[in-house]
Image 1 (cartoon, rainbow, N blue to C red):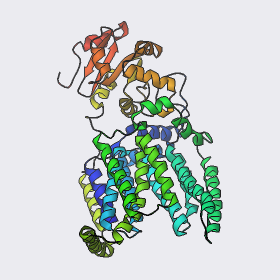
Image 2 (spheres, one colour):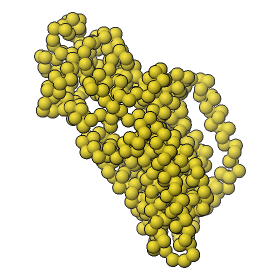
Image 3 (tube, rainbow, N blue to C red):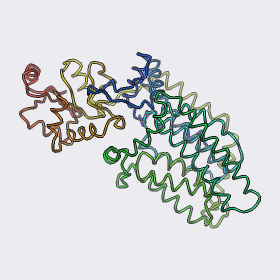
Length: 498
């Protein structure tokens, strides 16, 4: 069944373009490969002085660039689709180790996947999801099953800290199990009391080893303090959508709501006390998920095995026709599932070969979401001077039009100062003082969402002239002498229609 979960998820994401590809990361990786150096400053922005950047994603970006060179964007897309599918395959395999009701486990993993769907994109954070599942499994098995695979965690941390900034989640997991072993000797009785002390010592050594090996990165000790600097930036946390609390009125957040309700109901129905580690993990990661939507991914992964283990006790005790019906169906499916293992992998292999040979998995940048036509116009016209643009548009621009154009700031908001981020929102949202910000950065032209407030406002101004528009993006230049030629050329703004 785990194999079917992998196959189904991989094929659905592949053929529906369910994984969004953020091309800005590919450009950064290409720059590293071309220069054989890791940039210390934001080379894609024109603002001065140069912005120091914490390159916590550099290795992931190099991998993306290598895949792009070898296989194009399709290779990047397929690779990250595979990693996402592998992550939830491994999680489901772990859940099945509890030997609970397979139908219930399928329901749980589907809710976990649906809850995580809002962040399914080809970005470095996918590596964090995979390493989080592996680290969680290793720590939980050491704690409760006495299986010691802890020696894998320092090497994992070495890669993790160079792949993505969410490496801190690995330290949080270790910290939870360390705290558990410190507390339990004071509240438990019996011969097992000494075992907690020994495990606490092992966990302490483990976290020291992981800290030590984490210094092997381009940023040194600064990489370790970067996550704390990020969460302490209140302006960033309060304004960037992925850092905001989840909005339960949005349809895409509803699976998280249902997963949380299922967890509460399961805990109430079982009537059993949760393991202290389970309680700590739920409280910690639920708090993080309710605080910031980007952490729903990690809470969903944490909740999966806890739900599976506790649901087993509900269904193993029987109690009613419906429960007995599900148990009987689960037994029948499990009997089929066991002999199928080892053979079912032939199906995805055949499908993948067929798809690659027919080129049906060719990835193309979606012109309905990216300013593809507008950027092609910019590349032809070679506009002069500093620009301002939507951060997502600028991600695409640095992929498609760098070094011809440098941007104001791109999607990596966390690398910029609060002052510059405030200036960005001041202009983008047309707030008081936006004109002062325009003058401050000597902005000569703007590319922005056609249906935005800013675009609507600029259309009505005499000091700005629109030279291009389509349903995705519009381009405006200042009505000054150096732009008179381009303004005259496009007195009627170029669009796909005219």
